Amino acid sequence: MVQMAISSPAPAAAFKARTAWLAAQDKPEPLQAAGSVITIREGGEIFAEGGDPDHFYKVLSGVVRVCKFLSDGRRQIEAFHSTGDVFGFELGQERLLNAEAVSDCVLVCYRRRNVEKLAEQDDSITRQLFQYAMQNLAHAQGHSLLLGRRGAAEKVANFLLAWSARSKDKHSFNLEMTRQDIADYLGLTIETVSRSLSQFERDGVIALPNIRQVRVLDNEALEDLAA
Amino acid sequence: MVQMAISSPAPAAAFKARTAWLAAQDKPEPLQAAGSVITIREGGEIFAEGGDPDHFYKVLSGVVRVCKFLSDGRRQIEAFHSTGDVFGFELGQERLLNAEAVSDCVLVCYRRRNVEKLAEQDDSITRQLFQYAMQNLAHAQGHSLLLGRRGAAEKVANFLLAWSARSKDKHSFNLEMTRQDIADYLGLTIETVSRSLSQFERDGVIALPNIRQVRVLDNEALEDLAA
DNA sequence: CGCTTAATTGATCAGGGTCAATCGTGGTGG
DNA sequence: CCACCACGATTGACCCTGATCAATTAAGCG
Figure 1: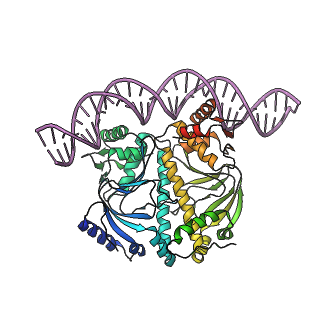
Figure 2: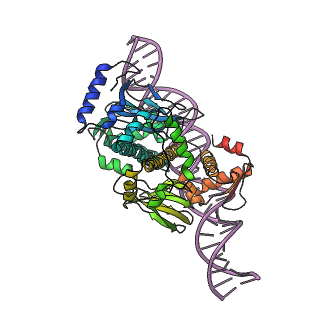
Figure 3: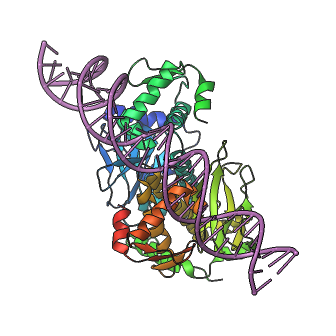
């Protein structure tokens, strides 16, 4: 496996993350041979609209946002990806979406052509890829559902629950992203997100010890809010 | 049944193979053998939330809506599928979505287990399935983008353009679905959809000869409205 | 310790939802 | 054949949620 540092050199961290990841696998994952580990600084670009979708990625650590910039400057975030997620599949000749690091990230970067080659010899890789694509599909469908006719509080509560579900500690976790990121993901403004969170706090549903930290005080109430 | 030849993994062949495959979409395919043709009446159920996702479907004719019913009775439509679309893939043990016939439909119904078995002997089937899943993914992502912070007119214009693009005649076509269906797809109310359409008509962008028919008079204006 | 950027909070406004009345169309039966 | 009915669509009046504009506060960071 080749190691390369794109955005900034963080060899020690990358190595640590890489070995942790390898250790976590029961059996060696055939896919790993086709990938190289890269690190991206917070705010760094992973791929851009219009680019060639010749790579896809797996998150080892950190958080990635996949988004699109509309003609009038608005930004819509399609998904946040965190540890274990695979993203960056695209069908056409050109990418339609951008991907950026929300926080410092360690990723495995797979060259599509290499993986396709491997997949010809190993059915399990094909199955894996299919699985990953389906996870992306399920998420995108869930996101559509969330963005449909739902109130602001409902959206924010949903977001908190979804984010808590993928955190180690489901009752106290860090939002890696800014309020603006959350707003762009939920189709709201930063002010509305802020107001919803403040309201939840006033109602004793959550606590906000600091700007990024969330403590869920009343999970049931939060689930009611998420409708 | 014609077997598509996916050429060898020679360095430059990957792209060629992909486009060749895309071009072959309309030809008879090995998959067809694993499916049975069924017809569903307008309004009929194809599958339901909570069911076993042991089949998936290809539309031969008619229009299908895939949707979810929320706790409070609201309905969110995730997608409309028409001729050529494949839908009904789901990852988990239980379906999360419903599918119903918008109009009388003829579908090919595939048993998942059978297809998986076939796929073991024929790589091209695996590729096809992957493509179909990716098409669903691309659509779901586009839908999320559409539902984000966009005005009502923008949404309706987008919908008309998307629907015209999959119609024979791009300037005069039938909306198979009701205004309510459109509203539930766009996250709007029936009244707002109606008002937007009326406005477009008043502005000379479209004509509405009858309740389901749409004629696009000024495609450019419509594209501007879609932003 | 300023400087910059993110977040909160408040006041006002508007887009779209809600409620309600009317229209249009297609189907049914007298 | 036409009167009636049922259902979907349109249109209007009003209201509410969340966007916008603006001021303040908090938090990093050199």
